[in-house]
Length: 112
Length: 113
View (spheres, rainbow over the protein chains, first blue to last red):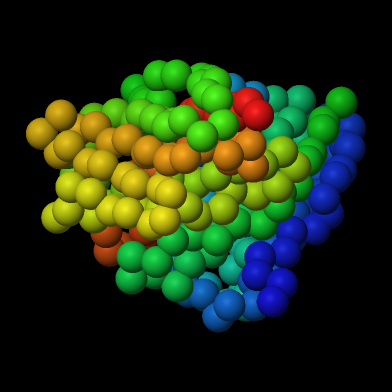
C-alpha cells in the first residue's frame, strides 16, 4: 500500500517561478489536506478538500491555489513563488468519520 | 492566537522511564484529540487519540489523558525506548464537518539508552 504519495520530494525554485506540488492517495479517502511546516512551528493548514471537486481555505492560503479534479489527487500550486514560501509541505487524507489523517512524507521546497 | 500549545519544545528521558508530553488548548469546541509522531524526513504518523467523552485511552505503552475542565491533555509513554525519540505533535479538531486539525508546535523527545 502506497498510502499518500507526494511528488516531488525536493524542489528548488527561483523567486517568481510557478510550480505544482502533487499528492495522490490510494485509500479512497474523501478528504484531503495541504499543510506547511516551518522550523519551530507546528503544521499549518493551507487548503483542504472535503470531497472531489470542492476546496476551502485553511489558516494560511495566501499565495497558493489548489485543485481536486479527481478523488485521489490533490494539487497545490504556487503562482509566483516567494522566499517566504520556503517550507516543508505535507499532504494528508482521511476517510472522515473520526478516522485519523494519513500523511505523505513531504515535499521540501526552497525558494531563492 | 495559538489554539493548541505544547509549551515544552524538548524533553529528555532515560530508557525505561516514563515520558510525559503535555498539550493545552483554548478552543472549547474541540472534541477530539490526537497525537502524532514524526521522525526526521518523514511525514507525521498517527499514534493515539481520545474523544472528549473519555478521560483516558490506552494503547500498549501509550496512554493519553484528557482533562476537559483544564483543557489539557497529556501523552504518557511507559516504558520509554530509544526508538520513541521523535517529535510529537498534539492535534485537536471538532468532529464532523471538514475534520480540520489544529496542531501544536511539537515536542522533541529524546530517549537516552
